[in-house]
Length: 317
Image (cartoon, rainbow, N blue to C red; front, side):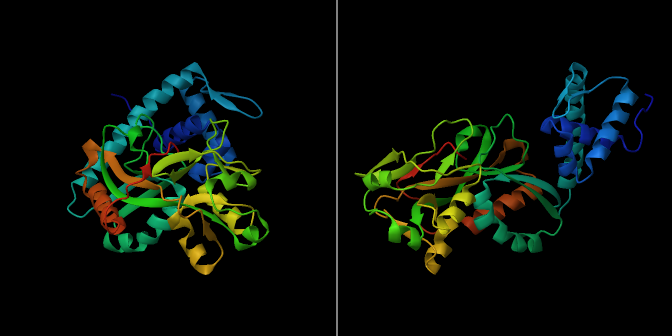
């Protein structure tokens, strides 16, 4: 079979797929760490080589042509086959090595997983980790990661999942805010407060706060003049700065509570927990590098004692 690929073709195909997925030459440039002009020139050379227009361009947007859509399918299949072949050879080594793509919520990454990485890197120096930080974990049909940390395991029904950790929801506010705010002793008092809101882009209402009332989990709606999309840590910093009470996981705020920057409120009601799972596709569980990473996290994150009685699977992870 004649060979039509030049030496740069593989990188060109990866760049084309990246631009198609992001629907942006600028986004692809940032993702691939090159200039937007280099992206445009590379795609143009590819179109000239193929004799087909792959993207329809406007001043603000790009979108695939019919030929581009068809070519994207072939490219993704070819690239995935090459990645799989490379990973298979890497997995034949006795020492775990190669790249792992890990998807996890940003707050859990910052506070729980990233502090463990020096120890992991020392133990497994030949494993590379790509972290994909997301407020929500994608569905099984769309995720392209090898390992996922999530509290919404229903999105990955065919993956192998292990329960590894839990986090309690706390309601917190700064001392300065509480000094000038109305009393906050029961859930009914929340209506008088500027509660910091978390939103999902597709929802018109903010996420309710799960509280334990009369030994049952009740989702309480709150109101406030500030909302945050896709970043739990934003609510934390705004609460520290005195903008109102916020609900967040205990692992985000425990140091701020210890230092007095934040104060827990409604403690008798904020007893609900998130359960975290570590999951991977069934056909990759025996890969040495994936098994090494998952076993390491499961051991390091294992909580003391039993998992809590009150917990929710909130549709935000």
